[in-house]
View 1 (cartoon, rainbow, N blue to C red):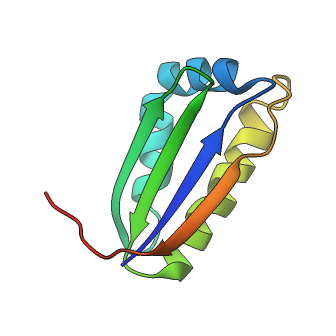
View 2: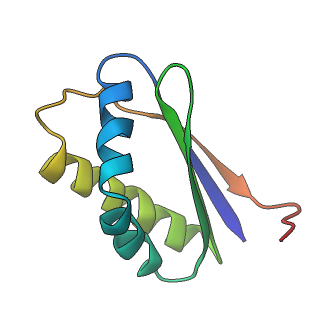
Length: 96
């Protein structure tokens, strides 16, 4: 499995997470169709928020990053959110 963590902070980050919270069903529909989807978490922080996506392989997390970028461009371009800090790598342990 492979995971990607996108950390949003700075300009527009809090506003983006306000929007994501009101559009949870849209986000869920989008992410669940990523090939190899395993899990997704959207976490609000004091500075904005973090998303964590786990897929069967890197191709899935790459697809999820592209879809997130496109969704933000289409639905949140007026917010002016800064690009996220992206961390990714193989999953060592996942508990359910």
